[in-house]
Image (cartoon, rainbow, N blue to C red; front, side, top):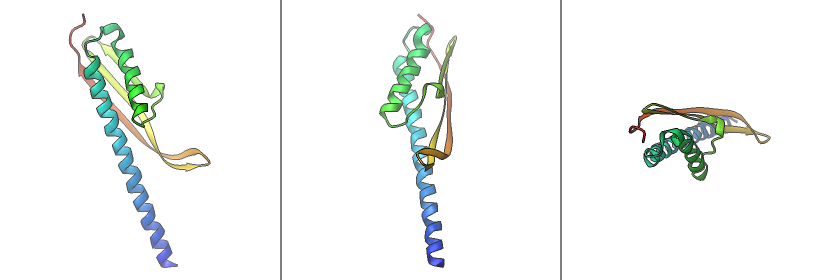
Length: 117
């Protein structure tokens, strides 16, 4: 009985490590997507830049396997500063199709943009 208990404890630790590693991987995917998108769209007109970058981040994140909803991604453009804020969660434990336990993740960064056209 002790062996079974310790086997389940070890399995729990392995799963926790796996879930944490996948959550960290999704965080780095999002950071790469944001950096790439901001670099590509930096030259767009200031008045449409924030919305274009936001749509592109959502599209690329979905394609790379990190499903983000529209309410989780915020992009604002203040003069020459572009601010990106993304909050999402990585589900760890499911019960009947619903996430019971999730790891909350947040990415926030400001970018200096070239002067508007």
